[in-house]
Amino acid sequence: MSNKKILIIGHEVPFENIIQNILNDEIQCKIAIYYPGYNFLNYIQEYSPSLIIATSGSQESLIQEIKKDKKLKNIPIFLLSGYYDKEDVLASVADEFQSKPADIEVFLEKVKKYIN
Image 1 (cartoon, rainbow, N blue to C red):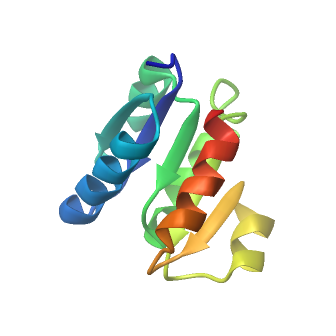
Image 2: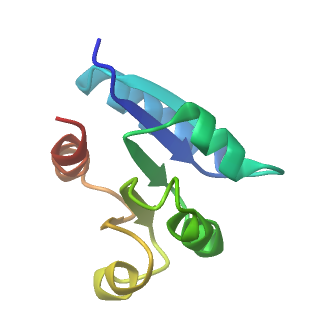
């Protein structure tokens, strides 16, 4: 297994579990799910992911906080959301974007770009 790590941040338990299962089947790396709460920046620093996947557009403020943090700002963030269009997201907070419902093959291709 690779030393790469993916952190999925969300608030839709069944959806994050599906994403985790898909990634586990296709990508050899450690994958964790985090539901934002108190000290989320500390959790992210301790986990030290290679990629963060945010599964909701409502997490824009959380993503902005990550990008402002000196230790975390270089971690790529992939936003998987039905709330925004690509130009809005890439111009503001995320490094990568895909709208929901997601084309799984395209999603995996984009994730592998950051993990491989």
